[in-house]
Length: 228
Image (tube, rainbow, N blue to C red; front, side, top):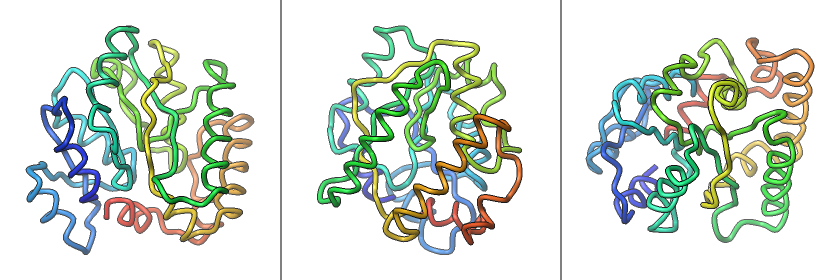
């Protein structure tokens, strides 16, 4: 998280407010966030944390970022807001890439996801929750993130948002940590998301714990790791 907050401070276009949703983490998350001038609110599962933060922000646009994202380009916020306004988009997502120094396989996996998400386009909208930019009025119109969805709540959000507004990919690329791949194993992560995609395509939103328990992760514990 310090890397993300530090990268936000370097941006040529400064956010009006920075809000950190913390799910009762046991490290120094709250202390670190406040040291960077961020406002801290109680979180929980990703959907809840994002909704709470968006409700507090009260800004025309809301950018959702996870703790392991880093805006390495100091013009990232300026560029994404300029393109968002120029194209008159209601919600936007981005191509993702691993932070510098990542293994070749990680670059391949991220590139494959980008191609997959772009190919599906409006037919089956995708937007990773760690980098979504949305108009507040659209966010409120669709009721924010569905907090009953236990996994892939970000893709459910993108699907509903696309039904009520214009969704597009911005040209800004978002660097993200590969620590989840390193912690859980690349094959396990890939298999988990393939199964999730099949569930979304055939059964709809994932409102049960099967994916979490199958792979040995406790939902709240996972969110605590993200918050750190």
